[in-house]
Length: 249
Image 1 (spheres, one colour):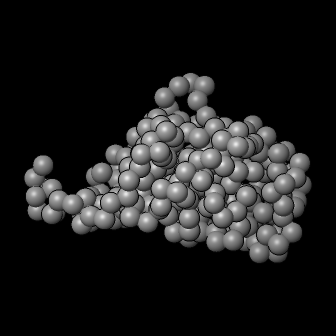
Image 2: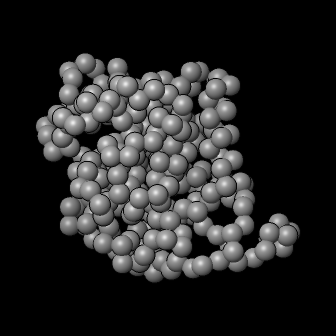
């Protein structure tokens, strides 16, 4: 594995964010957002992302291979969660992984990996070249990144088309795992459209910000569309215990 890929992994895992994985979608019914004093802990973030990868992708040989990540609202950290999951999964398997930026309005995956956004997902929707041509491989790794793509292609692309279905099918044949960073579920229909072609969806909630009503609305949207909800991630969780005490536990 190259130093570039290892550096990317360190940058993501050293961010002062925490991820708490909900074991089942039903936990959305009882999720309570509490205002607490923040305590930073890099180790908890690493462990929870690893737990997410193991539960969703590595728990069974016939588990989901194409998964959509979607936040409840803007700024909930969906891009961070999906990119961290992709890098962790790449370190857990020798299979090929492709993480895709399908957030057409506010793309950000290219910034995480420090790559150009001149060619990507939206271009794949407009052009007929092999889908792998629109992804960039992280040097020395089994991880491929498909950024959102050029603004010109974004204006003409459509989520509701047979082209999208064909591209998802092609991605399944080209990569062992596909992780899709989608826009917020409650704001745009894109996430549900993508999830109906995928093996399921993971919702990303932000601690102290996401309202229970909004989380339930997203869950109900998945149920109406018959989208398999694989779980929920509580991002940026904080703790009421002061740091000097918490570090001793």
